[in-house]
Amino acid sequence: MIQVNNPVLTNVLVEELHIKSQVPKPTAKGTPLRYSSAHSCGRQQGYAAFGVAPTEPMDEAGAWVTGLGTIVHEALQEAISRRFPSAQFEVSSEIGDISGSCDALISIHDVGSHYGGTHVLYELKTMGTYSFDKQVGWNRMRGTMGAGEGPAKKAIVQAGMNALGIESENPTFRIETLVMGSIGFEALSKQKASNMGIEGVHRFLAEFDIPREEWEPMAREELARMDGFAFNISAGYLPDRIAVDDNGGFLELNPNGRFWQCEYCAFRSLCKDDGEGQVRFMESVAFNG
Image 1 (tube, rainbow, N blue to C red):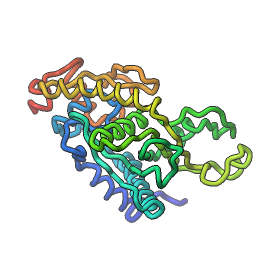
Image 2: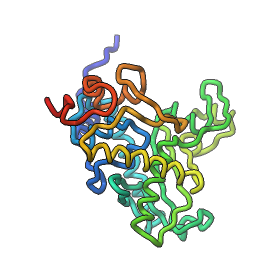
Image 3: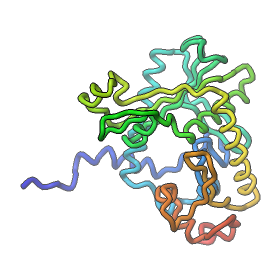
Image 4: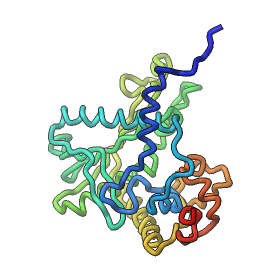
């Protein structure tokens, strides 16, 4: 009988990615908050802003998924630069106490004036089968397709905040359209793709154009919410456990519950100990050891 061995070679890459994942990433411009935290829990953002060490650091599986995403991002940016030499990557900006960087910023003279404005901001997300199928409206088990949900609101908001930040620092720039790319890790099988009328790259990737009238209001609303967190943090408080759900509504989290946000939170145990509501950081378990 063939046995599954303790890996000696197959695990080498994931071990390297896991080590890298334990090193905190600074914000793009040294701000306490980052665009990529859009729609996430205020308490979680507070711990990160105060430089608290995670009580539940990312495990190997999480490091593998995020590491693969980084590898794909970097390779795609290199490919885009060969096709569009004027493209700019990891363009950073800040709005108040929040900063970040976009995957790519490309002049419409290169990609087409139908996008409007002066530039197109591109954001890529890699994802598993479930998330990808939700976006494009597939039911792989049944081999059927319907209306997809499109990119997650969180992703659109993050890109929109980037766009507003870049515009604020470059008065001649105008970004009308966000181009959102999605790459799934598992391609639709050839047989099901044929039955569903799916061809070529559409078996595993999708691209969406998000107009300004859709992304800008959501981005500005989230900037206002995160500004509130920044105010609390500057006053020495950890914000409350409030996130935004997939429908854009406020969500009160509880680390003792079954919220997926809490399942993946790097500060879950600490959050349980600190209790509900806004917590003065000097009274936090994190501050008092």
